[in-house]
Length: 160
Image (cartoon, rainbow, N blue to C red):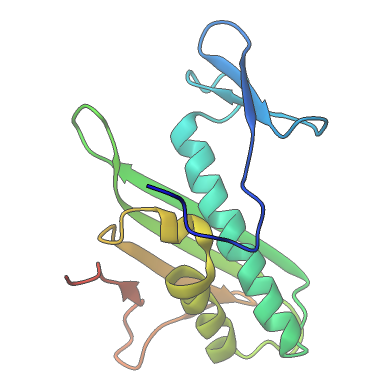
């Protein structure tokens, strides 16, 4: 089986064991990140996955709002993955909370940016199990965005 053609180069990283459950990972000739299975000297593998999901969607949110000429002054994302009580202890659901601050940011546009990032544009999200439920909450300038019924919006798993 051959991989589909892509305009982007493949992602090639090197992972070097640093003793114990510690690994230094990254592209050659660039600063590595420490991944520590015990969480002592760096994030663990699942924390790293949740960080990648947050960073990937965050980049898309920033780009969307910048294109709307409402640049973000500050962005903080809380990502949580609930894990199965089994082996492997895979992530069975996730929640992402986006704290977005900036002048003239319309809460509807911010929420749309987050929805598009999570459901359409983030390559990390698209790599995960499509049935993984991900809830999202958007807080713009300290105010939580809810839907018309007053509920926080949650992305249900894809039906299939």
